[in-house]
Image 1 (cartoon, rainbow, N blue to C red):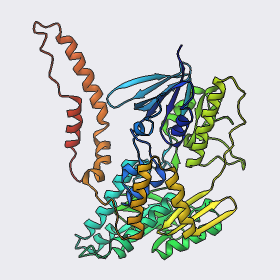
Image 2 (cartoon, one colour):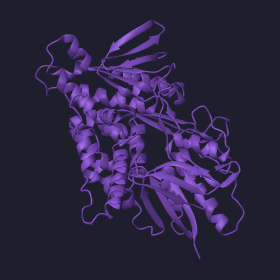
Image 3 (tube, helix red, strand yellow):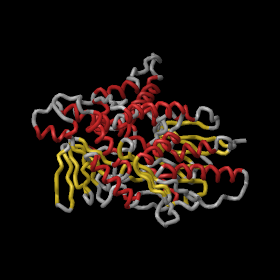
Image 4 (spheres, one colour):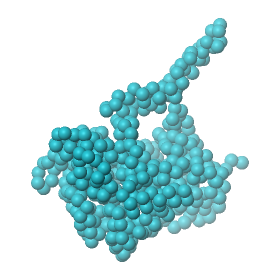
Length: 487
């Protein structure tokens, strides 16, 4: 007899914690994820600024789940869901396939939102993936290197101006780490520039940094940023981004800020899969594209489909949608697993999902952070220690926790950065891939044409004369080799 089939889309916090909670259940789980690793997204900015390596925040999924026998891990990007057929259509690397399910958990995370200005992405990468973090690391460290070569003062200033858009936790943490690099880690290493003269500008359209943390912590964070030399521009809207700068509108009017390195840390949106799923299932979405779910995290009319984390819209006790933070996804994953297990045991459904807010934290600099935990509002060194402890706990795997603590010690107690290697490929590959298109699309096309040519050749007198087309892997390599440097 076939066991109950659970398909999980996404190996973030929601998907991973749901799978772990089902490890002893009488189910067969198929996990579909676009990467082979689980990403600890809150620490991406530390990869971008050379504190941590990508491996420390992105352990391989197969290694994480190696002791859970009821999981089949499949690499691929879910393109669409057919709720009537209970089938998922997936685009894998060079191959398309389908996955059937009895219960579906959709936890595919979120994408960066540019508020309708997607072309900003060409020159201001977001902070949602390892690729984003490595690109930013190459751009940030590369900016200091290129500035050291400049003889034109204006060009040097452009390269030494770093603009971070978005004054939420990610933006504040990113701006703080770039300031630490410029004022603490890099001085004395260059002959022709003083890194301490770098400008770090933090921009947000609202009137406060960390505006969800409350006035007290927001004010303290703003004060600390100023002490670090970060220029904070609030009530300032970005209206254009190009190669050499960024244009903003503020109370002072229109302004252009010359800068070669821009970071986008403002806004998130649900991935396209959310819209497709909602349309197929007859559900509604909010303005950010998130699927409006029932109190048990299921899609209306489809109790077999759960939507978790950044993809779901569910009002909290205060009537506002639950935030797109790790704890919402983690608790949602555990809740969905509990519902599935109860259904299999024919037990009553649990109470509606209730999010327990464990608080919010953000680092500003070395030994300085803010933490809002219920009625408790902390800042400074104690909040920083709490931030360290919480992030160590939620890192997956003892090895990652151990090496992360070592790298933190190097970065925070000393003046070095453990991960400063940056390559041209990291800096330019994303735009090159946009220019040349999806390399796997050519793999699929060539694989298909090669297969068809092989079939037709079987009728020839020499059956061994199958066309010797290039292997798909060679095509991918050649696609990469054609990328012109500096594009």
